[in-house]
Image (cartoon, rainbow, N blue to C red; front, side, top):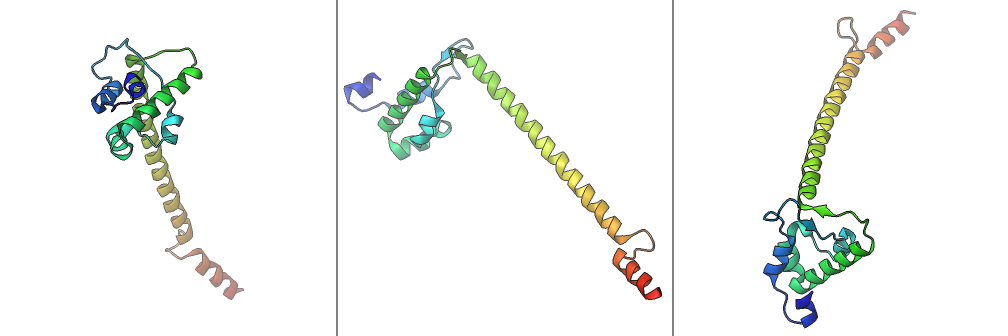
Length: 141
């Protein structure tokens, strides 16, 4: 905030440092941001380097400050710690793995159903198609 208020250049290293939490203690409280504000500003927190190249450090810093201010106004009163964020990230990875497994099972079931439908069309009496059997019955009558 101080660099923006002073009107000078914003230090890119400071922005990166504010977004890095790997070196922080598990109990360290993180400042929340409103992701919708970042999206509206076209700032991607997951690819900060691309956002810095696209918009510059000042615009990115301003977007994060607006996002933090909005989150503070809408705050739910619960603090998110570094450990809590890691737990959330670990949980989302497990959910994604479960979703992928579910998709694989669904694909296998679809293949089995398609195969069963093909077998029904072929019939069980020497491989004649159902339509051929019906046509033979009609001619015989």
